[in-house]
Image (cartoon, rainbow, N blue to C red; front, side):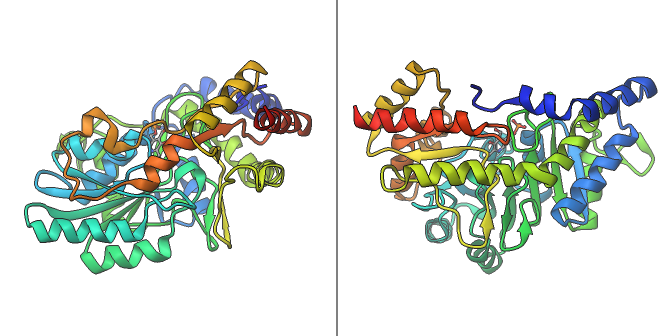
Length: 377
Ligand SMILES: Cc1ncc(COP(=O)(O)O)c(C=O)c1O
């Protein structure tokens, strides 16, 4: 059994993927081929955004979003304490401060109360300028945008949606990547929409921001083209081959993969309800289930369950073992006396089970039996 079965997905989509790759090989337009434009148009339409600009990976996508926000020295960028480092790394890279906020105890996404406390602490201290908020749709579950958007408006902050884990999710009828001034995603192979290497994209409704991204992705190119450099940029493009892989995968994701993920999550939820803390998805929302994470009673119980799963040959992972404030790289970031109880608690108790759209019912049952068995030991 695989934690995320990319071979099973390839088997299901082999004919479409092979012919799509073959057409790139035949045309030999490996950079900026027509598949890239086509994919950008389809991605923008899928999420309901005016512009999509693809780039080399989800981390670059976030760097681009930070560059568009103009975040740098003297700025405070607010982000959840429980995420992958890519959400917070660009702050340090551009000389801004990462101000961590606690997560909610149910969705595990950015807590609006903690966010507002931290904004006010920054303002009260008067040393940093509150600049941007990175809202991470963690594990595939969309953030509570109805609460986050008004806070960003109130304090004049740029909202960035980090949808690396949530492509295909939706929040009250709007798809992930449709929130914030800029939204970013990742096509890392294990993501809900993954390519066969690295890939990413930024989304915006703003024409000027989209034009800025197109320039930044190609060494800050100007109106005269790539040798007319008007700003410092980067070399960050999605290869044509990756676009060719993503086109049939995007269709499968929309046609049935997201639905199948709901079925797997539903079966897990029913089996573990009342025995472990099962994931919470707000009414009217759909998670992309990048991960199916449970909370054990405590670290000892978590470790006992994961050891049993490993012994039984069931793949399992811990996303994430440490909150951001506990990472050595962030030891000097300002804290303002905020505690991160929910993030600490989540990291101490979480473990994730195999989750993908091709997980057979028999395999799901095997996972369920092994977890329940571990609980009875
Ligand atoms: C929340 C989050 N943001 C950003 C990224 C960065 O994506 P990439 O690996 O494509 O750079 C990831 C990747 O794991 C992620 O989980």
